[in-house]
Image (tube, rainbow, N blue to C red; front, top):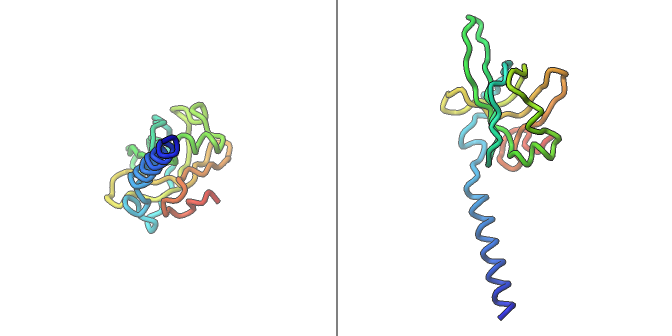
Length: 137
């Protein structure tokens, strides 16, 4: 009986893991690797939510207006393992983000690299999504 319960538990855990993986979208479903963007702007907000953290930035246009962008990054856990914390990116921080634009043309991008004011680079991407550089290199 104990063996049957253990097997049932393992089966349930496997189903939960499969559902989680299936719910995660691929890079190509939303973003276009042929539309790289480099955005220089000011952080307005950072959302530490699963399955992806989001960085909101205000980018100044050539005509003096600003455009709000949302940058998708890896999971909060992934960012923390890379040394990035909630205190690392405060509102008002000037940053540069290299990434790939959303296929639907909205002001959203999948972040590849974040360049901090002191020149440090942080890989923002998620692994295994099919995004360019998704291996963290």
